[in-house]
Amino acid sequence: MDKESTRRLIKKTFQNSFNKKDFIYFIKNLLNQYDESKVFHLHGCYIPKAFKNFIKIYERVGTYVDPEGKKIDILIVYLKRETTIDRARTAQRNFIARYLKERDEKDAGLIAFVSPQEEDWRFSFVK
Image (cartoon, rainbow, N blue to C red):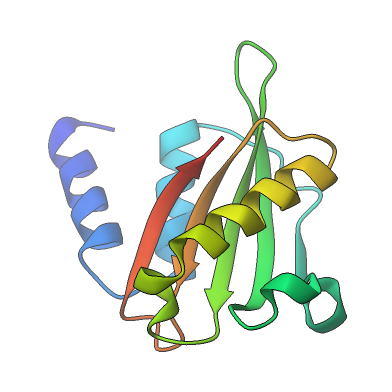
Protein backbone atom coordinates (compact mmCIF):
# COMPACT_ATOMS: atom_id res chain seq x y z
CA MET A 1 0.00 0.00 0.00
CA ASP A 2 1.42 3.38 -0.95
CA LYS A 3 1.77 6.27 1.49
CA GLU A 4 -1.32 8.18 0.31
CA SER A 5 -3.52 5.06 0.40
CA THR A 6 -2.29 4.39 3.92
CA ARG A 7 -3.21 7.93 5.00
CA ARG A 8 -6.69 7.58 3.51
CA LEU A 9 -7.20 4.23 5.22
CA ILE A 10 -6.16 5.59 8.61
CA LYS A 11 -8.36 8.67 8.20
CA LYS A 12 -11.37 6.61 7.06
CA THR A 13 -10.94 4.15 9.92
CA PHE A 14 -10.24 6.49 12.82
CA GLN A 15 -11.95 9.77 11.97
CA ASN A 16 -15.39 8.24 11.52
CA SER A 17 -17.91 6.27 13.52
CA PHE A 18 -16.95 2.67 14.13
CA ASN A 19 -17.44 0.43 11.12
CA LYS A 20 -16.52 -3.22 11.60
CA LYS A 21 -15.75 -3.75 7.93
CA ASP A 22 -13.36 -0.75 7.87
CA PHE A 23 -11.74 -1.85 11.13
CA ILE A 24 -11.06 -5.35 9.80
CA TYR A 25 -9.71 -3.94 6.54
CA PHE A 26 -7.34 -1.70 8.55
CA ILE A 27 -6.18 -4.66 10.66
CA LYS A 28 -5.57 -6.78 7.55
CA ASN A 29 -3.38 -4.03 6.13
CA LEU A 30 -1.61 -3.41 9.43
CA LEU A 31 -0.75 -7.06 10.11
CA ASN A 32 -0.68 -8.43 6.55
CA GLN A 33 -2.09 -11.76 7.72
CA TYR A 34 -3.66 -13.26 10.80
CA ASP A 35 -5.66 -16.35 11.73
CA GLU A 36 -9.40 -15.85 11.26
CA SER A 37 -10.30 -19.50 11.87
CA LYS A 38 -11.26 -19.16 15.54
CA VAL A 39 -13.52 -16.12 15.56
CA PHE A 40 -16.26 -15.88 18.16
CA HIS A 41 -18.99 -13.55 19.38
CA LEU A 42 -19.88 -13.69 23.10
CA HIS A 43 -22.40 -11.96 25.36
CA GLY A 44 -24.60 -12.59 28.38
CA CYS A 45 -23.35 -15.36 30.67
CA TYR A 46 -20.00 -15.44 28.85
CA ILE A 47 -19.09 -12.00 30.18
CA PRO A 48 -17.59 -12.24 33.68
CA LYS A 49 -19.88 -10.87 36.38
CA ALA A 50 -17.42 -8.12 37.34
CA PHE A 51 -17.72 -6.61 33.85
CA LYS A 52 -21.42 -7.06 33.03
CA ASN A 53 -22.16 -3.40 33.84
CA PHE A 54 -19.64 -2.23 31.24
CA ILE A 55 -19.43 -4.85 28.48
CA LYS A 56 -22.39 -5.77 26.26
CA ILE A 57 -20.73 -8.06 23.69
CA TYR A 58 -17.21 -8.91 22.67
CA GLU A 59 -15.86 -10.74 19.69
CA ARG A 60 -12.55 -12.02 18.46
CA VAL A 61 -11.97 -11.32 14.79
CA GLY A 62 -8.62 -13.07 14.68
CA THR A 63 -5.26 -13.89 16.20
CA TYR A 64 -1.91 -12.61 15.00
CA VAL A 65 1.39 -14.32 15.77
CA ASP A 66 4.37 -11.99 15.49
CA PRO A 67 7.82 -13.05 14.21
CA GLU A 68 8.91 -13.75 17.82
CA GLY A 69 5.95 -16.10 18.36
CA LYS A 70 3.90 -13.75 20.55
CA LYS A 71 0.13 -14.18 20.20
CA ILE A 72 -2.04 -11.09 19.83
CA ASP A 73 -5.83 -11.37 19.73
CA ILE A 74 -7.80 -8.83 17.71
CA LEU A 75 -11.02 -7.96 19.54
CA ILE A 76 -14.06 -5.75 19.24
CA VAL A 77 -15.66 -4.90 22.59
CA TYR A 78 -19.11 -3.30 22.50
CA LEU A 79 -19.74 -1.23 25.62
CA LYS A 80 -23.09 -0.80 27.38
CA ARG A 81 -23.04 2.97 27.92
CA GLU A 82 -21.72 6.02 26.10
CA THR A 83 -19.87 7.18 29.22
CA THR A 84 -18.06 3.86 29.56
CA ILE A 85 -15.64 4.72 26.74
CA ASP A 86 -14.04 7.49 28.82
CA ARG A 87 -14.89 6.79 32.43
CA ALA A 88 -14.27 3.06 32.69
CA ARG A 89 -10.80 2.65 31.19
CA THR A 90 -9.59 0.71 34.22
CA ALA A 91 -12.48 -1.74 33.91
CA GLN A 92 -11.79 -2.11 30.18
CA ARG A 93 -8.10 -2.75 30.81
CA ASN A 94 -8.91 -5.26 33.58
CA PHE A 95 -11.40 -7.04 31.32
CA ILE A 96 -8.78 -7.42 28.60
CA ALA A 97 -6.07 -8.47 31.08
CA ARG A 98 -8.36 -11.21 32.38
CA TYR A 99 -9.32 -12.23 28.85
CA LEU A 100 -5.68 -12.49 27.75
CA LYS A 101 -4.79 -14.62 30.76
CA GLU A 102 -7.76 -16.97 30.45
CA ARG A 103 -7.69 -17.38 26.66
CA ASP A 104 -4.61 -19.49 25.97
CA GLU A 105 -2.30 -17.02 27.71
CA LYS A 106 -2.25 -14.47 24.89
CA ASP A 107 0.57 -11.92 25.01
CA ALA A 108 -1.46 -8.88 23.99
CA GLY A 109 -4.62 -7.58 22.37
CA LEU A 110 -5.51 -5.07 19.68
CA ILE A 111 -8.95 -3.89 20.71
CA ALA A 112 -11.67 -1.63 19.38
CA PHE A 113 -13.76 -0.41 22.32
CA VAL A 114 -17.05 0.73 20.82
CA SER A 115 -19.73 2.89 22.45
CA PRO A 116 -23.42 1.92 21.99
CA GLN A 117 -24.06 4.46 19.23
CA GLU A 118 -20.78 3.49 17.50
CA GLU A 119 -19.95 7.16 16.92
CA ASP A 120 -17.31 7.16 19.63
CA TRP A 121 -14.75 4.39 19.80
CA ARG A 122 -11.17 3.82 20.85
CA PHE A 123 -8.40 1.62 19.46
CA SER A 124 -6.09 0.17 22.11
CA PHE A 125 -3.09 -2.10 22.39
CA VAL A 126 -3.05 -3.94 25.72
CA LYS A 127 -0.21 -6.15 26.99
